[in-house]
Length: 241
Image 1 (cartoon, rainbow, N blue to C red):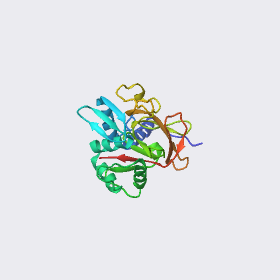
Image 2: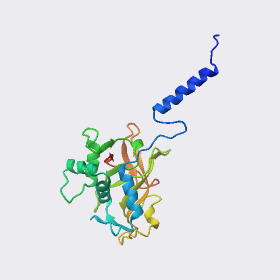
Image 3: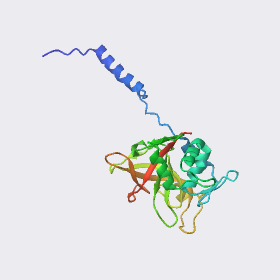
Image 4: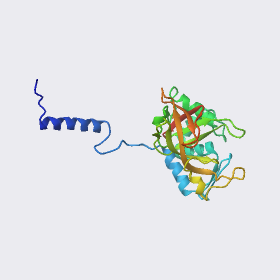
């Protein structure tokens, strides 16, 4: 049997090679991979931190001096884009042919995000898989009710895969229906809607997104991590400017 020469110096060379690969990959010894947060997360956090009152309504009414934020889900996204990613906002609005004074509906955002892989747009990056969701991404989906065509949120942290294959993540949005661990439940700044009795407007909570087991594509959502999964047209995009 041939003797294997594995001296201490050889072991040092192996360790050095492994560390070198980690550094080359952008991961230093004892460090976690760097998470790059998109500009919309900081804007959502700013609004939430500074606001004195908020409420859910379809007409966008923001008073910066009074720190009052009243809008619906897409009104919130459009306002955040205007403040933190104006080029991304302009390219999305132009591609979708949004008329002056109007904003995209959730289905419009879904179509726009789905097109990014084939038709790149300035200020945007496609996000095709649930595992790739990052802070600052926008997720939009369709559902039809008497007063709504869908919903849109801003991702607030890194999505974590659960044992059931769902990806749980914190989101910011404007809504009258609380998510899991929702900030609005105890936030006295959030206006109570007479129709639902819920506190509404800007806040954060936890949701979950489902992924196709083969492709990893986002195919559905849970309003809270423990609620029922709804499969629906859904897509995500990452604004960069």
